[in-house]
Each structure stands twice: as structure tokens, then as C-alpha cells.
Image 1 (cartoon, rainbow, N blue to C red):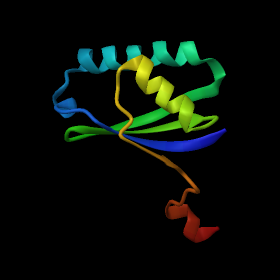
Image 2 (cartoon, rainbow, N blue to C red):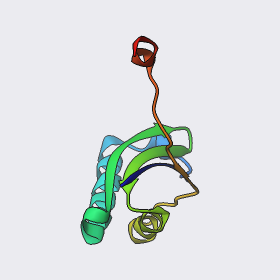
Image 3 (cartoon, rainbow, N blue to C red):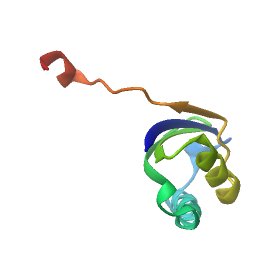
Image 4 (cartoon, rainbow, N blue to C red):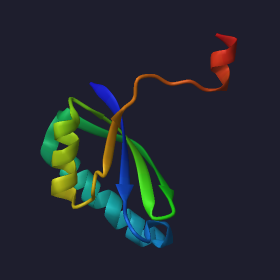
Length: 91
């Protein structure tokens, strides 16, 4: 599977309560359950009016299908080519 960064433009997402975020996660999980092993949600970061989500998926099409089922936009889908962090300097 490939790893993708998904940018979702969702006005006011940074103002959602813990219960509202819980509901959003549940909606995403329900969509993931329908799509089976073809897609996995790794984590998401909430910023002003956007989320940035890391997913593992067979291809972009399954991410777009997740967006359709869940009702959350996938405004930009970018395949992640690699990863670096502070420990990369020591490798």
C-alpha cells in the first residue's frame, strides 16, 4: 500500500468540540469499514479550517471513495514519497 497526505478544507473544523470530533472520527471509521483492507487511516492534524490526514491506501481512487462515503472532502491528495525526521541526520 502507498501512503498519502490528504488535505481537507472544512470551515470551522478547528472549533469543533471533543464530541463533534468523536462523531467525525466515527463517520470516517464507518466509511473505512465499508472499504475493507484497501484503506487505513493513520492520523490527522487539525488546523484552522483544514485537516491534514495520513492514510495508507491501494490508490487515490479508494481515498476519493472514502471521501464520498464519509462526506468529508479530499481537496488535495498527495502520495508521500518518503519521510525524514531529526534522527535522519544520524543514519
